[in-house]
Each structure stands twice: as structure tokens, then as C-alpha cells.
Image (tube, rainbow, N blue to C red; front, top):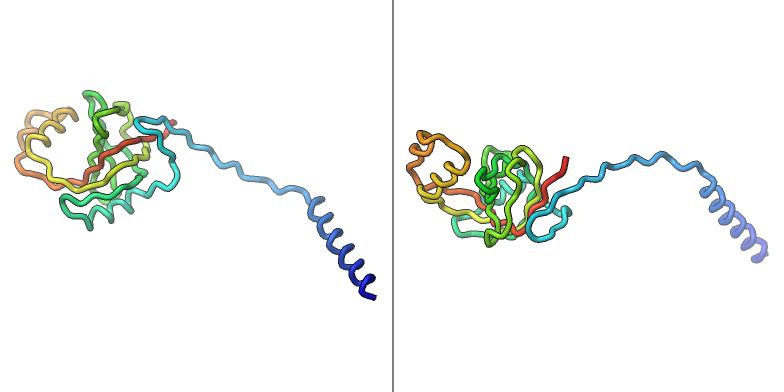
Length: 168
């Protein structure tokens, strides 16, 4: 009797496997693969946090604090002299000023509005009036706009060692 029960179970198991393999495959949605141009150290796009999440981290940081991070965000502006800095939208009305480690690489000057992933160190700093005026000049601001910069500014900053720019 045991042999007969075992035989029936085996037949049922084999039959169920057979039925599954004969099913018509379902349509698979193709996911569009995103490609990136890489600058600086080679980094991967995985595990980057959203700009809005990084904005929350910045709010809790004090001047001098820093954390290693990888952010995905939209570019607001880029240095028009060389591409040696850029600002990113944190989606809460704030921006993060991104510079590149050891001045070792630059990004294209025409990526404003593009999505980027940056890897490196996020920190909060105070930017002197002279440095703010320099950045305003690089960004193409008018002499009148530059002259209006008169106070030290607390800024969200990022020192990137690698950047991925989403290709269109």
C-alpha cells in the first residue's frame, strides 16, 4: 500500500511540473535601461538617495559636519568657465553646491536641467563674500547682482569624487 501511495504522489508531482512548463509565457514589460556618462572616479548608479532625503540630512547637520553619501538630483547650474562646479536642486527650495575632489575633473557646461548621481562627502559650510562673488561671476551674473552679495552664507556643500550624468 505504501508503494502505491508513493507512486500516486510521484505521478501527481511530475504531472504538476509538466503543466507549469507548458503554460504560455506572459508578456514581460521591458524596463528602459538608463545610461550615464561618467566623470571622475568610476561609480555605479545603485543605492543613490533622492535629493529630498538628502535635504533632510542637511537640515540636521551643523557647520563642520560631514557624511559620505551618494545623491541623485537635478542640476540647477554649472560653472560656465570650465564646468568646475555645479549646483543641484534639493527639492525643498534649497541647493547643494558641488565641487570636484582635487579639482581633478570637470562636468560638461550644458547639463543644467539634467539628472546626475554624485558620490562623495556631504557637508555644511560657510561661504565667504569673496567666494560667493567668484561663483556669481562664474555663473554669468551681472555686476549689480554680484555687488549685492554682502554677507557670509551658510551653504549645503558636497565634494564629489565621481559623477554620473544621465544621457538623453
